[in-house]
Length: 122
Image (cartoon, rainbow, N blue to C red; front, side, top):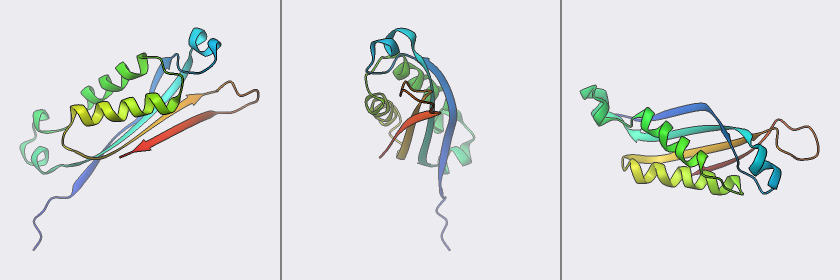
């Protein structure tokens, strides 16, 4: 009988930030609304058994890492998305896999568009 606990996925969904990412000067002055989604795969055996926050990936710490990276201006979504992914791996060695999606809402494309997104995973 296999007694191994399954890996689990933690998702922080639809985190909303107002930030100043973009290549156009107006984007750096006016800013825009961004939505960030995170998925983190990790071994959940220890927190499942201990019920202690110190044994788990702390959602508040994840949110704060994302908030800090969103406050640092980037020209490209690829850059800010990569910084968030790297910060997650630096701060949570128990991550087995992670996916970060950053969406710029109503991007200045010269036409109507809901959003443009970049997704990175490792």
